[in-house]
Amino acid sequence: MQFTIIQKELINAIKAINKIYNKNPHLPILSGVHLHASNNQLELTVTDLTAGLKVQIPAQITQEGQAILSGKIFIESISFFDQKETSFNLNEKDILITNGRDKVNIPVLTEEYPLFNLPTITSKSLSLSFWEKIVKKVVFATSNDQSRPALTGVLFDFTHPQLQFVGTDGFRLSVLKESQVIIEQLTENIILSAKALADTVALAQIFSLKEISFGYDQVGEQVFFITPDFTYFSKIINSNYPPYEKIIPLDFSTQITTDRENLVKNLTKASVFTRSGNNTVDLSINDQKLILSASTLNSGNFEGEQDLESHQGEDLKISFNIRYLLDFLNTCKGEVIWFGFNNPTSPAMIKDQTDEDLIYIAMPFKPKS
Image 1 (tube, rainbow, N blue to C red):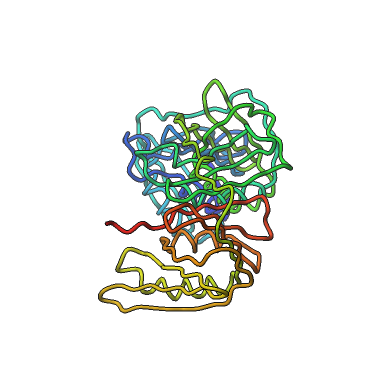
Image 2 (image 1 turned 90 degrees about the vertical axis):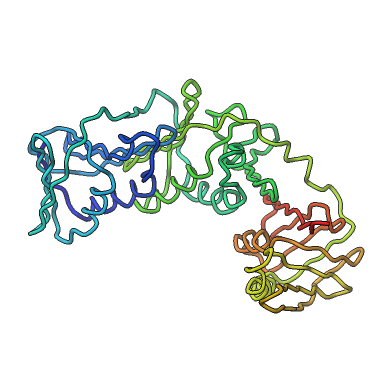
């Protein structure tokens, strides 16, 4: 195998695979990167068996071939090259990589690499903005706890007139309704890895893409994201999603609206005094005022106040994990935020008044008795 490649193209490929590459895989061979040079292109593949990525970039190929290299050494070596072109020359036991005066020899791994292929499936081209919206407004509410796999994914819920995308970590819930997009390949609910969605958006941004084709392989229980520059697959999550609709309140005893920008500023100030404690902020609603307070035993306390634009119903004092509020508010664009409450221990609803298709639920903080 012998070929030359534009370093700028190679760097983009390295950025892409580095987002997917697993530095501590459960099988040693999965720490490798598979290189395949043929048909005037270099294909780089990484996988951990539950997800995988193939990146294709143009190459001037003198001799076709393939090899597996240590991913860590390969990625770090390529990253410090600074000349226009990089050449690869496969020897019997290693590969010589040359960039200007820099020469790197990397041993070739001899185990069989678990490559994946795109099955014969129908795919639908969807805009990058569609996927970005799901990542921004839903993925942040999912969990990283692998002991509850369903909560690490986004539910694609087809049981409603509008397709719904749902993310929850058990303490908060984000539901995005989408009436404009129809995904014909999907006829039943699936849970798709939140990481896969975030990875795909990041990859598309690296390659400055505007569209991504989506395909569902029902037999293999996996989805594919397909573009001219890369193919990404992810296994769907086979787990029961919690009955999220049961925790969505239908009416409220207290409703308020307030300025979002001021609220973010006040919560950010309060966060300084929550870091060494339980990360909790208290909200007190009284007449036309919202008072925010936070304190810890050793760090002091903060109290902020802002006007309410409207207030209906009872006065209320309620506490939240401050991150649950800031995470959602930072996804919003509207100037005014609406809150609906019932009591200090029941789920609260928060809405950006410029986005009727999104609802967000946060569970209050319940002090230990």
